[in-house]
Length: 207
Image (spheres, rainbow, N blue to C red):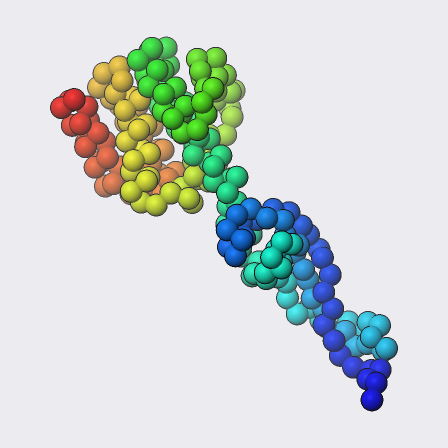
């Protein structure tokens, strides 16, 4: 018997983009699908009865996910977050101290290059310093990075920034304040921050 009248859920695509597909194990294209319940006649939707929800579908494996999956960073974003965060933190530290110190600048360039920006040099550092002086947002890159770093990695990251400040001598009060501000953006507690500063200073003295 052919059913010509009834209630059925119809889905349509309301968005698309790139996300990290857990099933595929990498960045993939997705479709954001929204469902509505309709009264239909001959399978033609006629009267909407209400929204039933949304889901994300990978266009490669066809896997379906809750929309919260779009809050997770893609592989590309994760790879870009570390050097971007390190640049922001290094510039903040240099501005708090002596941005003209060759030792501190060299340490900053080495750290940023080691984070994945192989071509980063003196000119690139000067450009970053100029952008920061012009009011460029240095907080957002650190916030993005913080969501990706585990606790030990945050401490390691902060220690690297402290070493930039220590490259030309002991930390000044403005440099210590810069470290505290960077740590706060990373979601670290004051006690953790003091611990990282102390251990890094002791390591520099011993070395």
